[in-house]
Length: 417
Ligand code: ACM
Ligand code: ZN
Image 1 (cartoon, protein in one colour):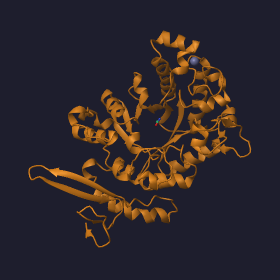
Image 2 (spheres, rainbow, N blue to C red):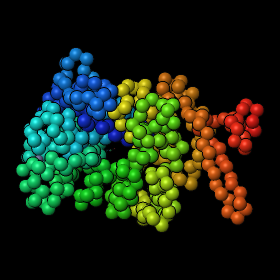
Image 3 (cartoon, rainbow, N blue to C red):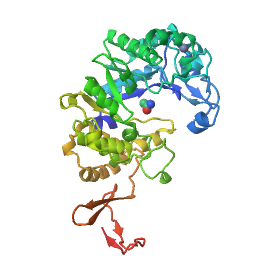
Image 4 (cartoon, helix red, strand yellow):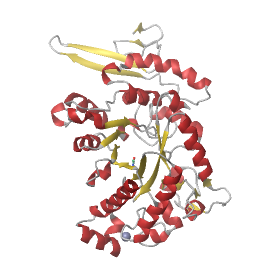
């Protein structure tokens, strides 16, 4: 409902990850029976400090869940009524620990809890991919199907006889992943769909129809556009909703980082000139980057940027209230990135409007973050006249900001900014 209201028209549904398998697959019933529940809800207690084990579906006190096919159909239909396309993602070849809790023969060692990557040298892994994607295609009529592709570790492949053999045949261990991605791309193309994947898939010589999501900054997106692929910009350093949106000491536990709404709003999804590419890069790296040091998207490839996306990773999100808190109001900034051209995007203008939406979000029952009253201080040295210009800004509007110039803490009687 909120996506439709704010004119966001693609819902990327991340259905499998090492947190749990979340969609019923008839050909592989153990995925949801053995890979969808775990001993702990708290991510740190489970993954980082705990036993990192999955438990069977009916285990008392287990945390987890999955969508039935009927539920998926209802979600897809509900979205379609609102002109939203649901794009499913099944992760290959990494982020798949939960698969091997159910089908250990699909990882290199044949034992669960030894690695998170599929054994690409095992034909059963390709069969799994085809059969799972076949059921996914039946449920999701979307043009795009996302096959993951991110953060696969090569360690298990290097010591697996099957994967080593494949790597030798193909010319290197990197090619092991490329082989699987090419298989997915071909399979989806044969079924009339477009493959979409995280920016690691650029290691492949992709079909011109495949689409790349740039999540490790903007560089993959710029490279992909310049190589002629469609691109969705979602740099994690800027557009991940699981990053802190205000001073972490004032916030519930989040993933890490610092991405307040003003930072999100400053992103330029189509960095087709050196200045905007450098501005993006400065935000991503949190340091000044010279325009001469960044390659932008070539002007004739700017139309390759087909979208911009915010991602709500749920490791540190335990319930819907917390999810709403992390998404809102930052989603409003992402919507404007998607629809408003850079030259019409103005923080001071957006700031007023987003503040006016906070009570509206609340009236609709959303547990939105209500914006920070931290004051941002920006200083700029004016060349020539040896003056320093100081700007104070605050997310909240209207805001009364008081200041002193003698180093003493401001009181309510101090000068009004
Ligand atoms: C990702 O953040 N690994 C897509
Ligand atoms: Zn292997």
